[in-house]
Image: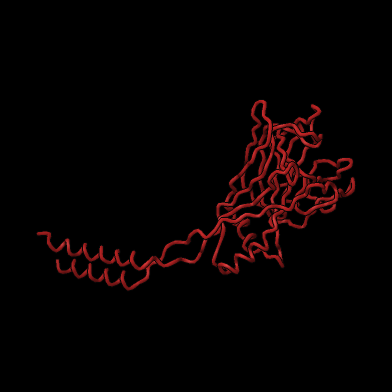
Length: 286
């Protein structure tokens, strides 16, 4: 029994003398929206791009007005016809925010988790024949290629306009590196109308996290996502500055990666419990 008492005392001294550490913890919620492309039309923007499968008269290879879309060739327009197949590229300038977080928390002392993409859409047919509506599926990719810009280009040369891709392998030829962040479904309810705010949780891709953490206003400041239609019936509009709707937004949780000491009162309580274990065993008869 004396050995048990001694063990309790030793543990009490050990716990009381050695600081205990908690795991990394939550620091803040942050978000970055794209720059509005309302009214830009075909003049070019590096914030958003409705990427066409084929060259469109007047639009070229991509459109960047007050809205873009992810849609298949069987989505239905306001005239009752089929829309042109299109995907959507989005670019978020996170560099300045990352610089601020590095100043506040220390570079290398924080990371991100629970990344999500949100945007405003609509269930109704739009008063614009560019956009179709319909239920269907789509994939969300992180892409390493940030050197793109919405441009009319020429019929034979899309310039810096991202290409239309209908498979991961086709996208990889342009992206250089990519990660599938989610496979999602857009469902238009029967008689659906009006606006809807959508939010999608993204997979915790190390490539995406690493790019965010390494961004800077003076270096690579952008994070690009590519939304790819995977169903010909899909018709999902994404407002990028039109109709006074919220802009596409990339959000994430900021977490500390530096373990923090448990308050002294907590580990002193722990040391007391160890001591009590030994004292209790003292009175147990053999």
